[in-house]
Length: 213
Image (cartoon, rainbow, N blue to C red):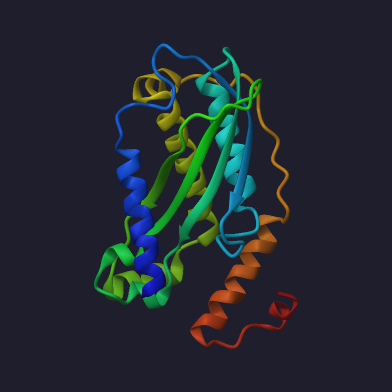
């Protein structure tokens, strides 16, 4: 519960920061993001592909938002990540069973190295407590949920940088180019690894194939 409480505080801080009306780049400023670096505060957060998935989705989103202006680099640190667990889902508090991701980010001028103010963003899916939550936690796809959170976080980062008005303008725009993902593991392998971990956490006897994880 202590870990869940601390993560809840991190999400609350991210939500408060995300509520700031002024974007990082004002309406009079321009800038195009040409590189994104993503790290995890804890390597156990999510699958081995989480950081790379956030990177490529954030960069692809950036290609939709701006094609001109001074080149910018974006550093993103994932500071909180949670998917529903069966033990958490049994609690009556639905927020404990939600999927969520929180990040700290900073925009940097590529030419000068000057950094704009840092900011926090988050993305979350509502959870369900009690027996219904337990059933949902047993049957949800952790890979699918993680990738959805990565997409939502990428969009939230862009909105925070460029503002809601420019986000509306970019909504139907095709990206100027496409970033190439270099995932450290296949998602099929990660799905198997996570399934084995969840069986062990339940106290179930995993199949022999889980021995490789």
